[in-house]
Image 1 (cartoon, rainbow, N blue to C red):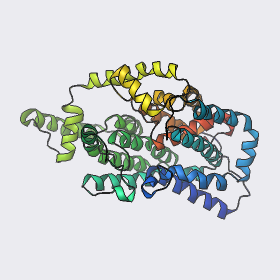
Image 2: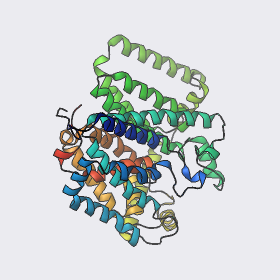
Image 3: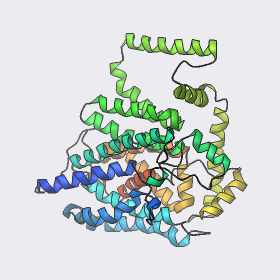
Image 4: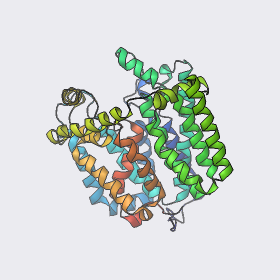
Length: 414
């Protein structure tokens, strides 16, 4: 992708630009290293839910942001109104059932501000670096939790008190660190690949993406989330295809052959214990891959009946009860469907429209939105990630992008 970077303002003082870069870097880091602020008695589930109250008034007063908000007031107001309709019209509401929709509204406003600021790619870069630094910090928390360190009281782990034994066993098998389970953490780390890919291509430094993939693979023995590996490894292959040489390929195939022979002879994969167990459980020893795929797909399709019945969303308790009656499961295993049940069908359709608009004109919307869309869609197809603040934040980007014409989207410069 080629294009001209559009600075926020050529006369902006260097000190102001530095402050903006620091702010978005810290926001990116906090988004991945997303502390549970509810642990400390605050009325917010996570740190990223609190930050819009601090950053919107500050960053939103930038001259370029105010000017763009005035120009795009009509589409932005329409998007916010359609999302807000769920707050009033959602069926079977109980305490807390509108929380994530309120958070999404704040994220959309904040995302609009960020997209305007990202026209200066130095600000966009700072955000991407923050995401990767936050991922490393979150990985450290995951490793600490896996070692048995109790982190709940520090807001660095989701409490498991009150969960039934089956759920406790599930989160022990798929450890999440800062997030509820490995099914969330694996996809959160996968989506961070968009930032790593952007920086690698923009600065011609493949080491950035390689380091990211190494961190992702280090998390796999603990999260046991194979779906989160797909897009990052696919892009690793595309990124490294020109560097592949016959000796390297043969050496890799030789190592793989030795591992397969050892597994066939001994029944065990000769790798470190945790990694070996993860591979055996999620690949070699999983005989229900087709059934798992069918279950996820059918639960999502069947849950569309509830979407049609409750076009403005439905409360959490009623949703889970009706889903269980329809599918035998309490989750639709689909982020688009769960978003429609959570915040209304209009919100889900707007998200799909935003993603489609970007993918149909990637050069016009720039690499950040394009790569993020490509990494986000597979995760949403098979996991209920509308309850995860990291994914809600990125949904905010795609929803906010609908209020911006392509020529006013972030820089398309690599």
